[in-house]
Length: 190
Image 1 (cartoon, rainbow, N blue to C red):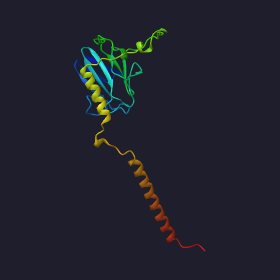
Image 2: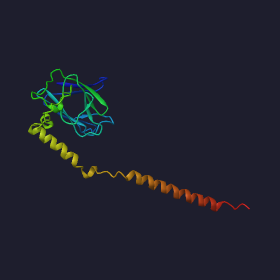
Image 3: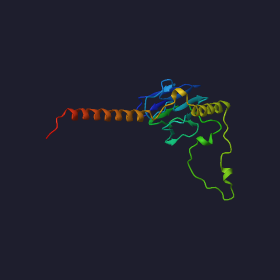
């Protein structure tokens, strides 16, 4: 079991082996956090074989591991700091281990080594990132869900502006009518 604790210990999230949890602001999420900086479906946490992986779900305010923005799936270790929007957690997972094959994209760069003049830039880059069938399926689901917005969620962003304009126009017409009535009933001054 791994526990994510906020810095003030007010929120604790327990993650059991084998769990794949969706964290977000919606009540239907496995972990629902009421904070405006948290997206409705912010991130996914998965604990499998002693490895805790986090995937940002294209959230608005981002997910950060040890104060670095998460742009791809990363693995958490005991003592790491993980931020979802403005909510910061510390990982309490002494049993967590790093994956057997280190994920180069999840490692934090600690030093810069110069590239040999004879070395091609392409040779220093990661040629391919091997993902399991499950990880590929999960990535495809995230991509599909980003591109498909149900009609029920289609929002007219101009509606508030239209309503404000209509209300302002209504108030101007009423004010004009009241002014005309007042002038009509006022005797002329000679």
